[in-house]
Image (cartoon, rainbow, N blue to C red; front, top):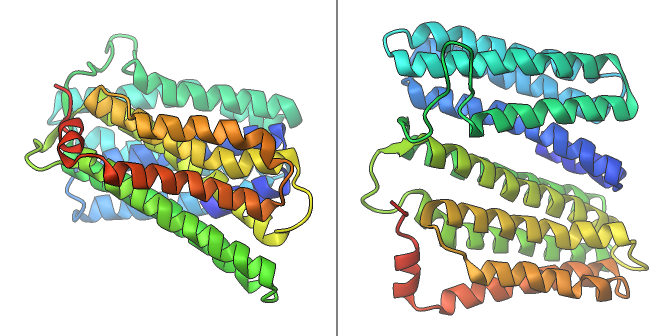
Length: 362
């Protein structure tokens, strides 16, 4: 689905196109997050859980099919698949947690808010254009935002965000997996671009530079973020507030990878010549979003600011105006140089300082 979102954004690299992509990405992300939480609550080897995950996978496939035309003729298909995933998941989750009242209550709260947001989702499918975008944006913001306030529900109250529900080890693995999947989609974009390049020197070079982006993102992620996801000695229970916050920060990082994929595909297609301002935003904005997401993640678990990555964001913004004078390939190289500087700077930092910063805040 991520590759289809990136391809769609590359074809419509405008503010409305970016807004539509953001809405669809957040909807897909919410499906993934709730499914990850489902597999944290049950033994994934149980046949009913495996069947549920397969059903969710099929629903996600249908959503991916609908993505290119989600704001056109296939809006209804996207919403139907989105609804079906939630209904199937909750049909298993709510009865399956009846022996654990706090978890079942949380599941009912989630379902209640799903019913609430079904109104703008359905209404959006019945209209078109800006009206659909506005209604779906409202729906997905409420979907994600309701978790941040504990899904307040009549008679059931809200989930206490300081309570212990999610198993930290499993949720950490899910975060690593989705980020690696996002990188895999970026590799796929590079491979498809190279296959269509006719092996022209400039386009092959652009493909190589785009692949270097994959390597840099991989190293930056696992150099720092993995230490925070599962540091040695961490307890096997994760509190709700960090659990939801880390999911949101990973959403920002994955959005950054998606935007990098969009920028890479445009550069591979046309590495030389004048660069449109929208391309500069995509090529530099992707790394900036990734760095921002990693800063947010770091702040959630340590309570500290990761200044090396903040400086990387500032540097990307500072060089952006000058990038309009360069060809697209040079802009992509500049983005990679900034990522490389951040990586080298963190690698050269005293190890003791990194270890202290990796200890989660209590």
